[in-house]
Image 1 (cartoon, rainbow, N blue to C red):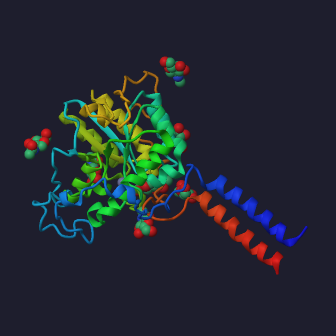
Image 2 (cartoon, rainbow, N blue to C red):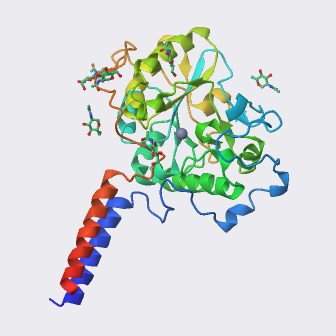
Image 3 (tube, protein in one colour):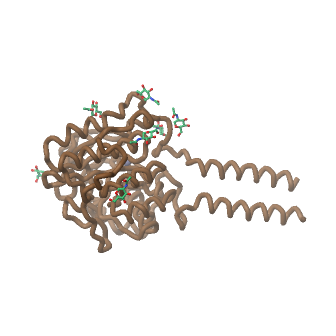
Length: 351
Ligand SMILES: *[C@@H]1O[C@H](CO)[C@@H](O)[C@H](O)[C@H]1NC(C)=O
Ligand SMILES: *[C@@H]1O[C@H](CO)[C@@H](O)[C@H](O)[C@H]1NC(C)=O
Ligand SMILES: *[C@@H]1O[C@H](CO)[C@@H](O)[C@H](O)[C@H]1NC(C)=O
Ligand SMILES: *[C@@H]1O[C@H](CO)[C@@H](O)[C@H](O)[C@H]1NC(C)=O
Ligand SMILES: *[C@@H]1O[C@H](CO)[C@@H](O)[C@H](O)[C@H]1NC(C)=O
Ligand SMILES: *[C@@H]1O[C@H](CO)[C@@H](O)[C@H](O)[C@H]1NC(C)=O
Ligand SMILES: *[C@@H]1O[C@H](CO)[C@@H](O)[C@H](O)[C@H]1NC(C)=O
Ligand SMILES: [Zn+2]
């Protein structure tokens, strides 16, 4: 065979392989986990003249001198009731939320939620949706709420208005492409908002989803001293006041995901009804006409730690996953390694 056609064949095979291994979500998407480009048609969605003149921060909560004037959450957990949702308003109702997925740990959590008839909220990263749209489909099909949580997880007070728009709209587009839904809620990474960020988010049509109970389970991803038992330990204390709450956990790290079922059981066993955040607040979850429902009672024989204890021994592996890094997932690595091998072999053939 002619060398030129041989290398063309190589290229074809390579492109097919790459498309099979990487393009989980159809379409052309920005580089994962990096600030995505702005689309010109999105600019008109935000009237710049309406934006409060809160300075763009150099780092999260770097300058809190105007924390009161611009209601900077990262400085003093300041909230504006008109735009921010912090807790379920009714006593004995709980909005359980998981951030930063879909991840390799999400399916097992979904299995548990399904087996216990539990409905929760997932705040998803656009880059993860592009990688794992089939998991987002399960989240939708199994009656959970989907919330926008940006494309690349920046602290929003530190980025430009154009960049905030791009972060949210690309994530919205990925969710629409994956499951045909347009969320009405967004969750700011790290809760980092001020009045400029609020105005942008509000003008784009979203409610801001914060929380009033935080497990800090994300620390387990990098801090070996984080104790898995703190997740259930915290929930055990939180359920005692009978007030409405919204809690923050992550389905991105093995420790958080593995202890999430025990936390659900603690909330339910305390007599709370677990609801998607739109259900407990009585707001619309999506632009589309979709209603979500509260959790039902768990079947008496549901498994996975219904006694409320965590399976910590098998689950405190803190080594692995890092969402905010650009480190590619393993199938990217393997296809990129193959790419290099093929390019080298093509070069050798052509010599
Ligand atoms: C905001 O909502 C909280 C909780 O419902 C309430 O305690 C507070 O008074 C409200 N603040 C304003 C300014 O309305
Ligand atoms: C709750 O979590 C914090 C860390 O976020 C930890 O310091 C504290 O000990 C935990 N409480 C319980 C009762 O486990
Ligand atoms: C649990 O109950 C359901 C129906 O209520 C039944 O289909 C299922 O087989 C039971 N599972 C176990 C492990 O007993
Ligand atoms: C706990 O972990 C062990 C070992 O991985 C596993 O066999 C068992 O099913 C787990 N139990 C629960 C309740 O998750
Ligand atoms: C889990 O973490 C605890 C304390 O953080 C440690 O003592 C234990 O050896 C760890 N277990 C595994 C399997 O890594
Ligand atoms: C922790 O997880 C990593 C990656 O998933 C794996 O390579 C490693 O063997 C695990 N370590 C333990 C102690 O389970
Ligand atoms: C995640 O990646 C970022 C950038 O590569 C790095 O700065 C950070 O320390 C990493 N965190 C963890 C938990 O590995
Ligand atoms: Zn997050």
